Length: 213
Image 1: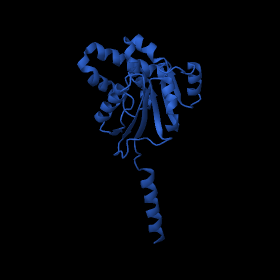
Image 2: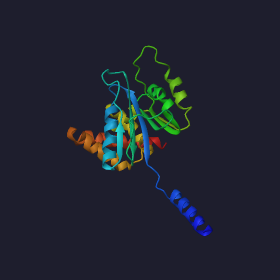
Image 3: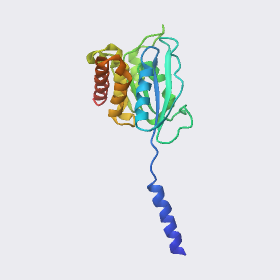
Image 4: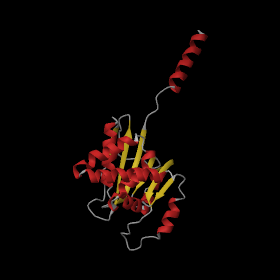
Protein backbone atom coordinates (compact mmCIF):
# COMPACT_ATOMS: atom_id res chain seq x y z
CA UNK A 1 0.00 0.00 0.00
CA UNK A 2 2.79 2.38 0.99
CA UNK A 3 4.67 1.50 -2.20
CA UNK A 4 1.58 2.22 -4.33
CA UNK A 5 1.17 5.66 -2.74
CA UNK A 6 4.81 6.53 -3.43
CA UNK A 7 4.49 5.42 -7.03
CA UNK A 8 1.33 7.51 -7.50
CA UNK A 9 3.14 10.55 -6.06
CA UNK A 10 6.08 9.99 -8.43
CA UNK A 11 3.67 9.76 -11.37
CA UNK A 12 2.06 13.08 -10.44
CA UNK A 13 5.47 14.75 -10.16
CA UNK A 14 6.56 13.28 -13.50
CA UNK A 15 3.42 14.54 -15.23
CA UNK A 16 3.86 17.99 -13.71
CA UNK A 17 7.50 18.27 -14.74
CA UNK A 18 6.84 16.99 -18.25
CA UNK A 19 3.65 18.94 -18.88
CA UNK A 20 4.12 20.98 -22.08
CA UNK A 21 4.50 24.68 -21.28
CA UNK A 22 2.02 27.08 -22.83
CA UNK A 23 3.33 29.33 -25.56
CA UNK A 24 2.24 32.89 -24.81
CA UNK A 25 3.28 36.18 -26.41
CA UNK A 26 1.56 39.33 -25.20
CA UNK A 27 2.57 42.32 -27.32
CA UNK A 28 1.68 46.01 -27.26
CA UNK A 29 2.19 47.85 -30.55
CA UNK A 30 2.36 51.64 -30.29
CA UNK A 31 3.16 54.76 -32.24
CA UNK A 32 1.25 57.62 -33.79
CA UNK A 33 -1.23 57.73 -36.65
CA UNK A 34 0.38 57.30 -40.06
CA UNK A 35 3.39 55.30 -38.85
CA UNK A 36 2.21 51.92 -40.09
CA UNK A 37 0.99 50.29 -36.87
CA UNK A 38 -1.64 48.35 -38.84
CA UNK A 39 1.04 46.86 -41.10
CA UNK A 40 2.99 45.60 -38.08
CA UNK A 41 -0.14 44.02 -36.63
CA UNK A 42 -1.14 42.51 -39.98
CA UNK A 43 2.30 40.98 -40.49
CA UNK A 44 2.32 39.36 -37.05
CA UNK A 45 -1.26 38.20 -37.56
CA UNK A 46 -0.55 36.53 -40.90
CA UNK A 47 2.51 34.80 -39.43
CA UNK A 48 0.47 33.61 -36.43
CA UNK A 49 -2.20 32.10 -38.67
CA UNK A 50 0.49 30.33 -40.70
CA UNK A 51 1.83 28.83 -37.46
CA UNK A 52 -1.64 27.70 -36.34
CA UNK A 53 -1.58 29.97 -33.30
CA UNK A 54 -4.56 31.50 -31.55
CA UNK A 55 -4.59 35.28 -31.56
CA UNK A 56 -6.64 38.16 -30.27
CA UNK A 57 -6.08 41.79 -31.09
CA UNK A 58 -7.73 44.75 -29.41
CA UNK A 59 -9.17 47.51 -31.55
CA UNK A 60 -6.49 49.84 -32.88
CA UNK A 61 -7.16 53.22 -31.27
CA UNK A 62 -6.22 56.62 -32.66
CA UNK A 63 -6.04 55.87 -36.38
CA UNK A 64 -8.79 58.38 -37.18
CA UNK A 65 -6.46 61.24 -36.31
CA UNK A 66 -3.18 61.29 -38.20
CA UNK A 67 -0.47 62.15 -35.70
CA UNK A 68 -2.56 61.01 -32.72
CA UNK A 69 -1.31 58.28 -30.41
CA UNK A 70 -2.06 54.73 -31.60
CA UNK A 71 -1.91 51.48 -29.71
CA UNK A 72 -3.12 47.92 -29.93
CA UNK A 73 -2.86 44.86 -27.69
CA UNK A 74 -1.86 41.73 -29.59
CA UNK A 75 -2.04 38.33 -27.86
CA UNK A 76 -0.62 35.10 -29.29
CA UNK A 77 -0.84 31.62 -27.80
CA UNK A 78 -0.98 27.94 -28.69
CA UNK A 79 -4.12 27.79 -26.52
CA UNK A 80 -7.37 29.75 -26.92
CA UNK A 81 -7.07 33.35 -25.70
CA UNK A 82 -9.95 34.59 -23.55
CA UNK A 83 -9.39 38.35 -23.55
CA UNK A 84 -7.97 40.77 -26.11
CA UNK A 85 -6.60 43.07 -23.38
CA UNK A 86 -3.24 42.55 -21.69
CA UNK A 87 -3.31 43.07 -17.90
CA UNK A 88 -0.94 45.58 -16.30
CA UNK A 89 2.54 44.16 -15.84
CA UNK A 90 2.00 41.20 -18.17
CA UNK A 91 3.19 42.34 -21.62
CA UNK A 92 6.17 40.39 -22.95
CA UNK A 93 7.02 43.01 -25.53
CA UNK A 94 6.35 46.64 -26.44
CA UNK A 95 6.95 47.43 -30.11
CA UNK A 96 6.95 51.17 -30.66
CA UNK A 97 7.58 53.22 -33.78
CA UNK A 98 7.82 56.40 -31.69
CA UNK A 99 9.98 56.80 -28.54
CA UNK A 100 7.64 58.80 -26.29
CA UNK A 101 4.76 56.45 -27.11
CA UNK A 102 6.85 53.51 -25.87
CA UNK A 103 7.02 55.12 -22.41
CA UNK A 104 3.24 55.57 -22.32
CA UNK A 105 2.75 51.79 -22.07
CA UNK A 106 5.47 50.90 -19.56
CA UNK A 107 2.87 50.04 -16.87
CA UNK A 108 1.87 47.06 -19.03
CA UNK A 109 5.43 45.70 -19.42
CA UNK A 110 6.32 42.62 -17.39
CA UNK A 111 9.40 42.48 -15.18
CA UNK A 112 11.32 40.52 -17.80
CA UNK A 113 9.65 42.08 -20.84
CA UNK A 114 11.37 43.88 -23.70
CA UNK A 115 10.82 47.34 -25.10
CA UNK A 116 11.87 47.84 -28.73
CA UNK A 117 11.53 51.37 -30.06
CA UNK A 118 12.52 53.83 -32.72
CA UNK A 119 14.78 56.64 -31.49
CA UNK A 120 13.41 59.16 -34.00
CA UNK A 121 10.50 61.18 -32.60
CA UNK A 122 7.39 62.33 -34.39
CA UNK A 123 6.86 65.65 -32.67
CA UNK A 124 3.09 65.99 -32.71
CA UNK A 125 2.53 68.17 -29.62
CA UNK A 126 3.83 71.67 -28.76
CA UNK A 127 5.46 70.64 -25.46
CA UNK A 128 7.17 67.48 -26.71
CA UNK A 129 9.93 66.62 -24.18
CA UNK A 130 13.62 66.68 -25.18
CA UNK A 131 14.40 63.47 -27.08
CA UNK A 132 17.51 62.91 -24.94
CA UNK A 133 15.34 62.76 -21.82
CA UNK A 134 12.97 60.27 -23.42
CA UNK A 135 15.80 57.97 -24.51
CA UNK A 136 17.33 58.23 -21.04
CA UNK A 137 14.07 57.00 -19.50
CA UNK A 138 13.80 54.14 -21.99
CA UNK A 139 17.33 53.02 -21.16
CA UNK A 140 16.29 52.64 -17.51
CA UNK A 141 14.24 49.62 -18.57
CA UNK A 142 16.30 46.47 -18.04
CA UNK A 143 15.55 44.96 -21.46
CA UNK A 144 15.50 47.59 -24.17
CA UNK A 145 16.49 48.11 -27.78
CA UNK A 146 16.60 51.62 -29.24
CA UNK A 147 17.48 52.03 -32.92
CA UNK A 148 17.18 54.77 -35.52
CA UNK A 149 14.60 52.95 -37.61
CA UNK A 150 14.07 55.89 -39.96
CA UNK A 151 17.75 55.97 -40.99
CA UNK A 152 17.86 52.19 -41.39
CA UNK A 153 14.70 52.32 -43.51
CA UNK A 154 16.23 54.91 -45.84
CA UNK A 155 19.25 52.64 -46.29
CA UNK A 156 16.87 49.79 -47.12
CA UNK A 157 15.31 51.86 -49.88
CA UNK A 158 12.26 53.59 -48.38
CA UNK A 159 11.85 56.05 -45.53
CA UNK A 160 8.31 54.68 -45.09
CA UNK A 161 9.60 51.26 -43.98
CA UNK A 162 10.60 52.35 -40.47
CA UNK A 163 7.71 50.35 -39.01
CA UNK A 164 8.99 47.16 -40.63
CA UNK A 165 12.53 47.90 -39.40
CA UNK A 166 11.16 48.10 -35.85
CA UNK A 167 9.28 44.84 -36.37
CA UNK A 168 12.55 43.24 -37.45
CA UNK A 169 14.31 44.54 -34.33
CA UNK A 170 11.52 43.07 -32.18
CA UNK A 171 11.40 39.75 -34.06
CA UNK A 172 13.80 37.86 -31.75
CA UNK A 173 11.20 38.30 -28.99
CA UNK A 174 8.21 37.21 -31.06
CA UNK A 175 7.77 33.49 -30.57
CA UNK A 176 7.56 32.50 -34.21
CA UNK A 177 10.17 31.62 -36.83
CA UNK A 178 11.60 34.71 -38.51
CA UNK A 179 10.85 33.10 -41.87
CA UNK A 180 7.13 33.25 -40.97
CA UNK A 181 7.33 37.03 -40.67
CA UNK A 182 9.17 37.21 -44.00
CA UNK A 183 6.46 35.10 -45.66
CA UNK A 184 3.81 37.34 -44.11
CA UNK A 185 5.49 40.41 -45.64
CA UNK A 186 5.48 38.74 -49.05
CA UNK A 187 1.76 38.08 -48.67
CA UNK A 188 0.88 41.50 -47.21
CA UNK A 189 2.78 43.60 -49.76
CA UNK A 190 2.57 41.22 -52.72
CA UNK A 191 -0.10 43.22 -54.54
CA UNK A 192 2.11 46.33 -54.43
CA UNK A 193 4.78 44.70 -56.57
CA UNK A 194 8.10 42.92 -56.23
CA UNK A 195 10.06 46.11 -55.52
CA UNK A 196 7.92 46.98 -52.48
CA UNK A 197 8.18 43.42 -51.20
CA UNK A 198 11.97 43.46 -51.63
CA UNK A 199 12.32 46.79 -49.77
CA UNK A 200 10.26 45.55 -46.83
CA UNK A 201 12.15 42.24 -46.67
CA UNK A 202 15.38 44.20 -46.62
CA UNK A 203 13.95 46.46 -43.90
CA UNK A 204 12.88 43.63 -41.59
CA UNK A 205 16.26 41.89 -41.97
CA UNK A 206 18.13 45.14 -41.30
CA UNK A 207 16.05 45.73 -38.18
CA UNK A 208 16.80 42.24 -36.87
CA UNK A 209 20.52 42.65 -37.54
CA UNK A 210 20.62 46.01 -35.77
CA UNK A 211 18.85 44.57 -32.71
CA UNK A 212 21.82 42.27 -32.19
CA UNK A 213 24.41 45.07 -32.10
